[in-house]
Image (cartoon, rainbow, N blue to C red; front, side, top):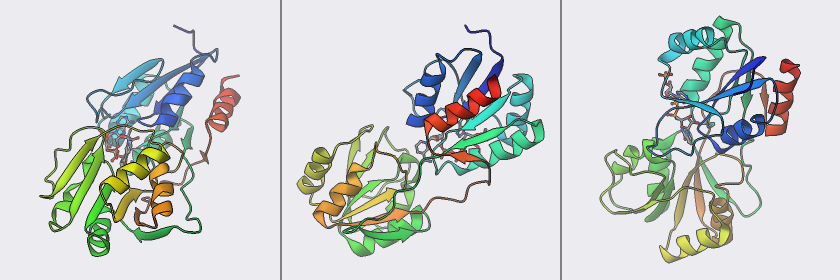
Length: 250
Ligand code: NAP
């Protein structure tokens, strides 16, 4: 184990969080602890020290920061993981710990894209059911219940692990973890005769192929808008996050 001068908590659960932990493993005088929510039974564990499970709200996270003598926090959670990001902002303020958000830029529509913005997943489920009969749903397994309220369409649901929510009656479930590639996405959508795609605006490359495929096939995409995030300093790349750590660990 490294003798650390700077103890960093990475709030993770994303590819970027894991890549940041990997990059920091070889940085002297920095000890990074990656925190995962524990949503999936077989998580891809980042390099270095990890902890798994919720902290117990703002109070629990504040206590953790103090007890572990954390010198800095990087919030590398998914853009739709709004609760933990708000908790981190409050806890870091209370414990006087600097906080940086590492957040991928949102995808922007390009010529040929047919996006329909939805404020949230229930709204997306309603819009998709109006637009199509064979719906490809890629919003993660935690927010599938709203689709059960629209029982007529047939759904192709892709998630990393089996959903536990109430599901619509006509569906095929695909258990897969990205990254996904364009040829495979085109084949998948053609072979299932998909006529509408539902997506979160995750940003990054790992899951963008479905958006390119929908564009190529002329399909509408119902895009769930990102939830509001706390106003904290933010960067969009791992390099910038590393720079932030290096500045503070000298
Ligand atoms: P959320 O709604 O923001 O968080 C709910 C609660 O889960 C938090 O209050 C916290 O519990 C716990 N939690 C969340 N992230 C945590 C972390 N990294 N370490 C420790 N506890 C954490 O988050 P979510 O949408 O359920 O997402 C959970 C995790 O999955 C996140 O790490 C996120 O990066 C990842 N993820 C989410 C999505 C998505 O679409 N939401 C997609 C891909 C990956 P306590 O209050 O008890 O501390």
